[in-house]
Image (cartoon, rainbow, N blue to C red; front, side, top):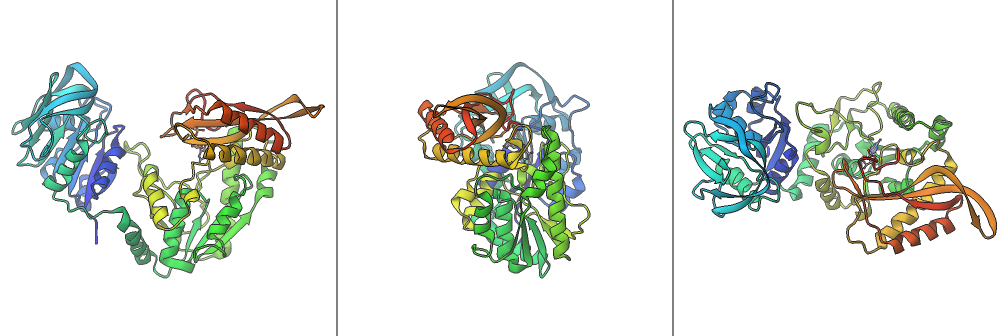
Amino acid sequence: MKNEMILVLDFGGQYNQLIARCVRECNVYAEVHPYTITLDKITEMAPKGIIFTGGPNSVYLETSPHYDKAILEIGIPVLGICYGSQLMAYMLDGEVATAPVSEYGRTKVTINTSSRLFHGIDENTDVWMSHTDYIAKAPEGFTVTGHSPVCPVAAMEDDDRRLYATQFHPEVTHTREGRKIISNFVYTICGCKGDWKMDSFVDEQIRLIKEKVGDGKALCALSGGVDSSVAAVLMSKAIGKNLTCVFVDHGLLRKDEGDQVEAIFGPLGNYDLNFIRVNAADRFYDKLKGVEEPEKKRKIIGEEFIRVFEEQAKKIGAVDFLVQGTIYPDVIESGLGKSAVIKSHHNVGGLPDCVDFKEIVEPLRMLFKDEVRRAGSKLGLPDHLVNRQPFPGPGLGVRIVGEVTSEKVKIVQEADAIFREELDKAVLEERPGQYFAALSNLRSVGVMGDFRTYDYAVVLRAVNTTDFMTAECCNIPFEVQQICMRRIINEVKGVNRVMFDLTSKPPGTIELE
Ligand code: XMP
């Protein structure tokens, strides 16, 4: 059975994924596509409704994204949001102008509650605005269904043609009744029944994978990260022993991580799959010998990873499908015409190009990270794996400043394990989005037990971030920092100094390299 689908047409606004998310919270499947998608393709996909997203520009700019007006005439309901609403007005010969007063942030609008879009919404409701242009005059045939003191057309519609527009953003939580508005659109206007549920997602995917892969063989590069683990388990439930997972331990993982991954997926684990662990640490350390430049290190690690994976794939031979843990934000990176790039599973390089696969299988490509975590829990993956914080593909290679050696890897693994253990048990106002220990290449003089030391300085980093694009140092209580410092110095050989990194991003990045 094909799910009902709402198509979110991306004009470059920052909340595109939130829109899709809101629709899915209504139990209706949503897909975001760039505005460059053809109308033929849209018709073929047969969405139940279309949502035009916001966007940063004025509709009058030549460089601004536009769309064929015919999209408004194919009988599929359309909701335009912010730029999308202005675009709808512009396409139908309404008037869009620079607003005398820009509106940013929370605003009260008065809406017409007899509109099907606003059924059950307060007549005066709080919404989130973010615009400099506005619709000065609605197109012919449209009724104005909302206004604010400075925005004459905060909402408009032509119910007969099933075209609706809001200048405000129903998808952000600051729009108090935004969820209800989206729900009215997908249920009342588009006639969706709500057939997409996380609970059924797992069963449905297993069925689809079985259908697609049949008796074919599939190969999965398993890193132990959330996405690849969930993808592997889904595949394994669907095709059992026809799946082979290759786990490349590059020697740059966190303490005991390789063994943890093996315990779950290996022969003694819970899943009926062929698991190959390749302990390739020495190969990686060899290649990294004497290399200090961060980008060079990244490239070497990425390249070597591909080589190891390729060798294994060749040994197995005749593999039809490559499984990737691609998730939704990977598919539509920043929207705006960027087509879906097949992203390297491991995040450290490209796909092996001398291994032939008939097809790529990406069972998670419609999910957001937290949805992937929920799917993982449903599949019975342990909490510590499902709730893992992000870990970069090049691993500790980018957490050791300068040359990587096995000695330094050991130091940073031990220090990191202590730091994470202490933060995990500490009572914190807020859990940091990412936290880890890194190793600076600073060696300094200290005194321990009456002896002079000349050892490394460990850097502790804990940041608050949700999107990982910006980050602020997390306020870790001083006592907790002190405990970490004492334990690291006492327990980790080769360290005589511990520093706490206060830098936000920007100007710093989260990882040290
Ligand atoms: P930065 O250091 O750029 O990191 O602020 C932002 C987020 O991306 C992760 N990161 C990487 N992930 N390969 C990855 O798969 C990489 O080369 C890489 N570099 C950084 C980082 O851990 C953080 O979550």
